[in-house]
Length: 305
Image (tube, rainbow, N blue to C red; front, side, top):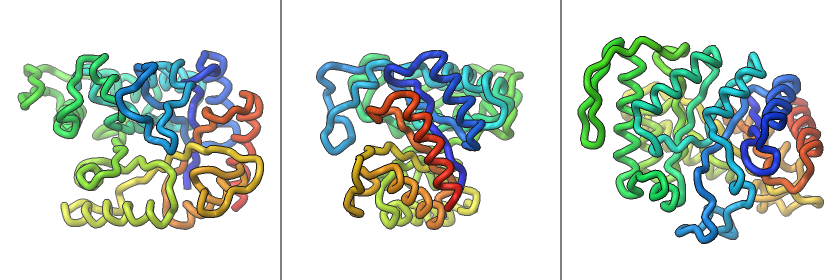
């Protein structure tokens, strides 16, 4: 199982030195990938609760960096690790601009980009960028249509329900052909069907493994029914640990637990067939140096298993 680490693109460590240190340290420690998320707004009173037990958005999101610029910066300071978004809200900009940015990043990183798209949870952000909250699924489908065609052809045009692009020459191509892997964060039946029918893989968040693998089985069965090879799909599991000083009850993991319990969870995930797992230590109250130390303990502990 591949292991990844989240970049410090949120909170007090979201600065050049933080990104450089985590990027280089992750590569040195043997991590396989670096990941960043997407946030454009931190309203005082969000119109929808944050998707967590208490419904409160973490304060670290009040300080946020641009995800693609951050990955380009990380690419310049690494040579091996892959670079992923978990998740990028691909609906907040026109698909043609998105295609240009993603293609550029894949070229500059020499083919190390993994694109993870999500639809977000907060309508306020959509309002702030002038994109309708309603119809997100259809907008994502048409965005994927444009990206796929843009990457695959030397001349490109599109006329759809939402976007029209006149015929144009497309000279710059991603280093990865036919394009960078596209993974989708999804939990609804419609979202899982979209993963199965047109994505490279799935971006779930940590949950009890029996539930996770049950949802993954649904994706694989749907992929086979649609004529795809299920073995070609990839799962990258995000873990946002809530670290405790004493062992949590087993039923509380992975919602909370000690670092050792999260190491055990990652080992069990590997045994269950998870292809990749990445951990985000950014919401821990620990200091930056302590999180670096925890990242080392985590990768060493999982690899030892």
